[in-house]
Image 1 (cartoon, protein in one colour):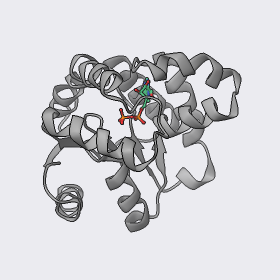
Image 2 (cartoon, helix red, strand yellow):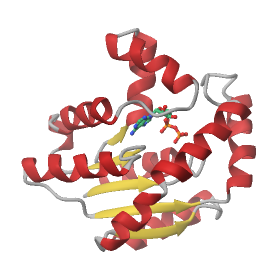
Image 3 (cartoon, helix red, strand yellow):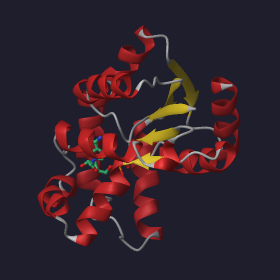
Length: 188
Ligand code: ADP
């Protein structure tokens, strides 16, 4: 199973991805997690990405496409994966199509987790409090920037994938378990 989870910051992509990982025994490939790990380890990529991530902008398409393509070649991705936070631009979606073509693979579905922007601000501010400020980009100002970047650069992927017949939309405002049920039934 090769899935993409699409949705604004705070919609619950990471939460749902973790649940799906154990149901389908395939890994979650989160570009956000990969970038945060690189930043924490101060690798050349992390040093380059830090300021961009901290202000809520997008890291370059080539960088994230490259790290995802390499990650997909790891043995644990043999039976599939859940992409969380990638693709985030039309250019990344096109890069994804090409990398999958080259590897002789295709996506099974793109699940859009729909959410109300007003609730997202509240959710993320709470997440920031609970994690004790673990994420430098989980503050209100940067979050508003991330939501703006989402609606400008990532939301167009909804029609991109809908035109390819891959899009399934679920209501991300429902309780976590209900969202999981909706996703499973949409992709089964
Ligand atoms: P969220 O979905 O909560 O906004 P993520 O953990 O997916 O957060 O991403 C955090 C940050 O990492 C983004 O705001 C962006 O700076 C960077 N990032 C993650 N994925 C990508 C991507 N596919 N392309 C460019 N930048 C990305």
